[in-house]
Length: 235
Length: 238
Image (cartoon, rainbow over all chains, first blue to last red):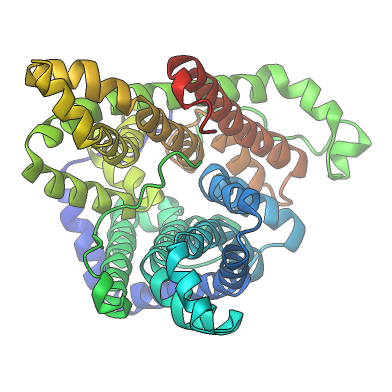
């Protein structure tokens, strides 16, 4: 079996010392990871958000929405990253695409659910007031869809940031470079980087929860922002 | 690292498909099913089953507690949401100082993630009985425990199975990450070893990756079938 320099709580102290001793290195790696995650999230948003909203507006393609949600959970990130590496080669692009595929699942599914979930009577009423399709989408469906839609974006963002360290095995850089390279950075480096990765995910999670609260129309704010969304019975 | 590693493809020998690293070499898959892919698949099933069974054994009583004492739901929910944000690659490593590079390390992390999927779904399921139904049960003279066992639990079965589906599919995915420097068990290890070749060996990546995806889909279909037999009344509603 594999042998690590297993130790005790001192290792954790050393881990924080590692962070303290190499602040610029850690910062560079963190920024690399944020860059990769941001690019992936942007790509996922670009691809999945309009598709989900439009499908939801026309109430078509529930199969695609369900498929996307299964894809989001069922496709192992390691498999995705490894598979894209064989196609796109080592580096930034392959990781960006792999992470974007992972992130587009929850975005698409939630956007679709959010728009189809808007009360039909409300939409009818808007139509009765003489609104055009575009106006209905822009002024009624989208504002009402924001909480759930944003939940999808938040889940995608957290998934991408949490998965990004794995990109290191395919040349994606970031804090994962330290985590998967115990030979160079020893256990304290690995743990230090792991702490940073955790902190980064937590910051993204909390920041987006706050942002979600801020962008939610006031009348809809009762929805619980802090909990993990569970999409019952859909998978 | 790495252990007494099985199966790094030998580029020196073998047929032209393997030496040339063509897209997919059936010959290699057949040849290494017995020593690599088969055992890895079986280990992956074991990793997943152990994690989900233990996770359910923990999540179920917690959910019952949160169902009876509603004020507990918020803290449990917040805690599980926090666990959900911990990157698996980091969590595995953070456990190493305590439990070493062992199966225990892998399972502790996997169980933690299953809790996040199972707990909210079980609670939601227990809540799904409508007030009228509970009222009727109370009117018939059922005690609180009887209502739980005879009314709320049966009605919660679809949501519980829904939670199990998410947990199983996610665990299959997360367990592959354990193959990165933590354990040589499961389908993640052959993928990671193939990636670390000077030229990533495509056949090994694709075959182990496809097995992982197939395992997730197969397990999901199995749970759907179980739900159909366990709760026939939901059959009409898809």
